[in-house]
Length: 421
Ligand code: EPZ
Picture 1 (cartoon, rainbow, N blue to C red):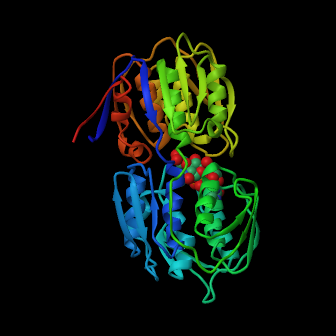
Picture 2: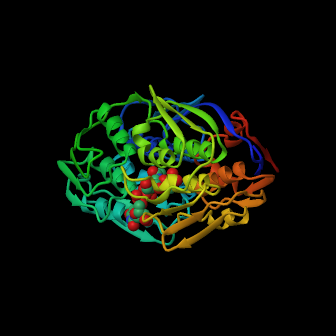
Picture 3: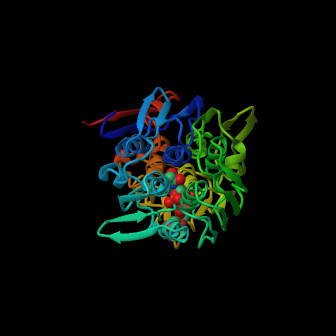
């Protein structure tokens, strides 16, 4: 795969895609294997750079790791090493998921502050405050941090989260399942990926009730077994493809996806003129004729419109007839792709946390730069909708969350290829 994408847009998308396992499920799940005494096997794992970095972190703390054709097997040592390898840990936000499991598996954890998409400040105070409340000692120094568990291990806590952070809910759930006593997490996030993590931990013997609701109860247990597990499908990849066919026109069948987990996105596209039929374990989405403006969309915590889907949905509406407004109250800089939309000839403007789009008749291909994962995917959709050739740089952002995106869209009739390098 090269260093940039070349796209010659203006073609409809047609075909069938099987949606892989969710990136935002498999990343906490891989960290959670450190809580399990037996081997864990995951199926359907997508080939993403964030997954590669996660496997590097697990190897770095002493786990046995094998990965072939979407099947990943992890064997955790009785005692893991406590220092996370700097490179992979800095490369993504998901290194934060190793704090809780290593406090149980190594009694301590040292790591740099996590990296990830620059869509906002993204502090980790809610993770750290919760772990401290469970007995961890937190030391922040330089660009990193060290946490130490008490000799007797973490203890349960009745804890109200400052805000419903997805990652912090997953961190505190992983801390609670092996802590002494009962934990109650109040004001928890409700995303499907949290339920997926709880379902996996339950299969390993954890005692959890209420995952997927704002209050989660956990009875800590002394040990967790291994298991085999297939994560839920990626609702954001499915939303990305739905947005692409809405923007370009054509007909896509999405297999192995959960329409119920992407309901606000589907409702928006239906309102704007797409035909959508739910199928057994999937859906068919068609757009013939023009797309009308989608009105105002507010993102929020599940089951509201997913913040990750907002940029890729916005790209679909750049040529709609009318106005569409996406307001994201989750991250300070969710629409980094707006400047590049404008370079393509789109009529877009920022108004506070909103991106306001007035559909134009035509977009013209040009050079574009991805600045984060979902913004990069949105630029691919916009370039597919534009006349002429576009070159997208910064493709490393896109590779974090999508397997070979050129192969994916190429199979559906797009004129797209890797270049450079
Ligand atoms: C997860 O990030 C996802 N990443 C994100 O997907 C997703 O956008 C986000 O949840 C919201 O749904 C993974 O699951 C790997 P948050 P996370 O903690 O956990 C603030 C993608 O493109 N906050 O719910 O980091 C934070 O700054 C990625 O796949 C604190 O202030 O999101 C943000 O404004 C991008 N302190 C808000 O909460 C904290 O300790 C929501 O963040 C934690 C978060």
